[in-house]
Length: 353
Ligand code: SAH
Ligand code: SF4
Image (cartoon, rainbow, N blue to C red; front, side, top):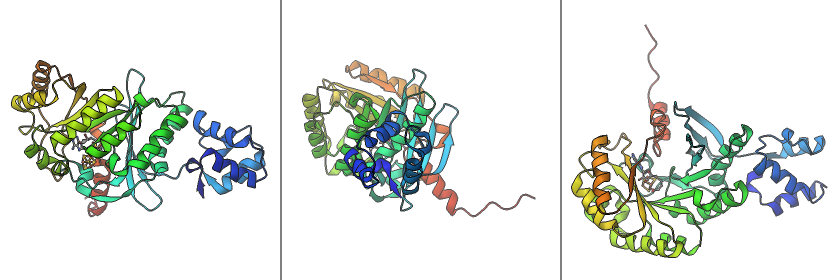
């Protein structure tokens, strides 16, 4: 069955023409899909019933199957989607009190970058996602929100995978988020481990998308030990690319820093980071580490996180400690998938006596 989300307006128009339908139908159906959030053809009440039945027999509204779903007490929904070939990817929806509804979506099945503390990195790379597979993760949440009178307001590409290692598909998905779901560029964030040439290319696109850089360490030796890709594009090169992005886009950059107890959370690291970023329009997001099975580090104590913020402030570098959302449901990058896989290989529990 063909996925309707995979078709552009002209492609849909061609399919409908072959069914003997008038030209305006494509726009009408896309209105149902992207504005009214229809989840079935039968909801498209201004289409003749025979057409609805014909469409239902040959098209589906979304090709992602929900493998598992977990709901957190704080309103976070975390899903593992199964793709047509059995690959699993994660997508999370976060609800904030100020009304924001943010989808965190994946750009690849697995990841080739090998960051030591990341559950996705620990799994390795499986394959690239298509632009539709990326877009649809957000579109499905958007449609559910629309159905209950809410709206998807933000999208962050911070799920599984390295977005700039799948550059063209990610860019196309971003354009569709803007065009079809009406999400403004400023409400879209792309997070990268720091592929410097791609950051420069992204700067040339002229988008107002927020760029987040996963920094996590302020010296090359420490950063390479956590993020092996740092050997390829060391800090000096990465920060040059960041300055270029700021210059071109006029936007400040977000830097991500996973606080690992006793490793990168002490005042001397904050001092080094302050010196590195001083003068660059930016914001630092401090995220206490989510523990993963194959990395021994532990999350920072909140008092150390607060001290880290104070040191950065002295350098004029604004920073906030990010509230961990959905922590009770494995909402760290790649964590739901690794939990599900682990459960699958574990022998069934012995019967209760
Ligand atoms: N590949 C991209 C985007 C996905 S990861 C990137 O690395 O930026 C999204 C963010 O989660 C990154 O900042 C990443 O470093 C961070 N992250 C990964 N594993 C984590 C963990 N166990 N605890 C805290 N942050 C983690
Ligand atoms: Fe890939 Fe990002 Fe995880 Fe690194 S942190 S392994 S780049 S998903």
